[in-house]
Length: 147
Image 1: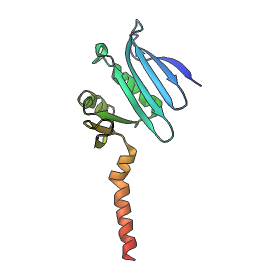
Image 2 (image 1 turned 60 degrees about the vertical axis):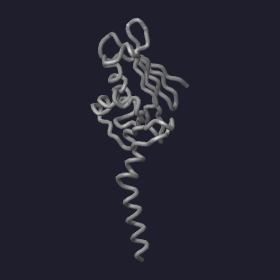
Image 3 (image 1 turned 90 degrees about the vertical axis):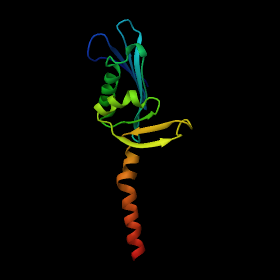
Image 4 (image 1 turned 30 degrees about the horizontal axis):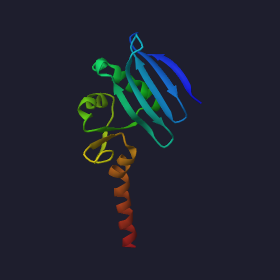
């Protein structure tokens, strides 16, 4: 089943169309003439809340379209969805991600393309491994070895 809803964010220039399926949410931003200004594809499952794709047409960059798409994403998925950004796009997205409270969790080389580096933001799995799980496991293994 697909659920479609229209919303208005900000000025009357930007029209947002949201299409929802069980696991995906598509948000499309159009200008007042119906031309594509930007879009975002989201994954919404119990296991993962993720921004899969964020695109703003070059003619509409630096006009708040990306910010509004991310703000709507936060309403749809909650405060901390996962997003990965390639090194080719990190410079243009970093200010927006920082402003919206995303935090860098991991950096991995060759995930999608051998030559690219991917930056993971809000990756709870990486945060657990980096900040909690590994030190706890090492401590427990040391305790077991001392018995």
